[in-house]
Amino acid sequence: SMPPSFPYCWCTIKDADYPPAADGFLYMPRMYIRGCGQPIFDWYHWYDIDSASDGGIVEISTNDGITWTQVTPELGYPCPALSPGSALSGQPAYTGTSDGWEYASVDLTPWVIYSEVWLRFRFASNATGSAPGWFIDDVGLTEAYGVIKGTVDLGYTTDESGATVQIAALENSAVSNSAGQYMLDRVKVGTWNVSCTRPGYAGQVEIGVAVARDETVTV
Image 1 (cartoon, helix red, strand yellow):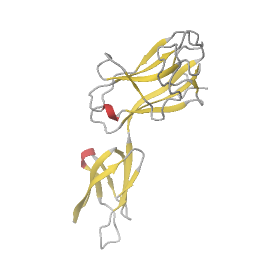
Image 2 (tube, helix red, strand yellow; image 1 turned 60 degrees about the horizontal axis):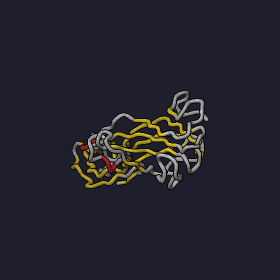
Image 3 (cartoon, helix red, strand yellow; image 1 turned 135 degrees about the vertical axis):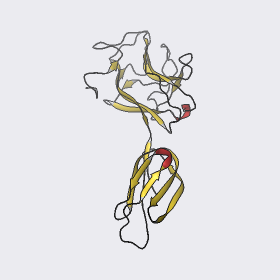
Image 4 (cartoon, helix red, strand yellow; image 1 turned 30 degrees about the vertical axis):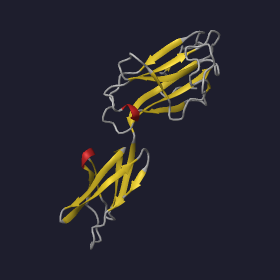
């Protein structure tokens, strides 16, 4: 199966099975996430790993690699605990065979209090394990976004166009069409005040509009 960014991807070993007693790491660049609403670390992967014996996990460090903590992907790991014998014995992990190239992600919101985080992929096998391994591609860090839409009612006019709807804190704005409809796209997850202004009309503000990931809010 071809990786999304063919011919490039990261893998345990190219064109060969991984060896027994492996304990390897793939380090990502350090990431600055303080101030993000809901940062999402995501990737695509394909794996064929000796089931329940060998496996791969994702770890995070908030102290420049002095200590590492395993993180749980949003859809979890397929194995609740690897069997004894590897460096990851007893830990939940990716193991077995994936359904082709699969999308995976970790919500980093609990770590936005730190100015910098460091993530790594870790793979380990026991003394007898050997299989094609773990292949990783299109690793990224994105903000979670939602959408705000609604209709402006200017009153006593058949043309509702030209009203500016904006979230000043995000510098995100839209202008209503003739029916008064507007849409604010890619609104960062959080709670925002949405204002509406047009020359000659009194401005209005909708206080505390909550925006969740991949959701559309109508106000």
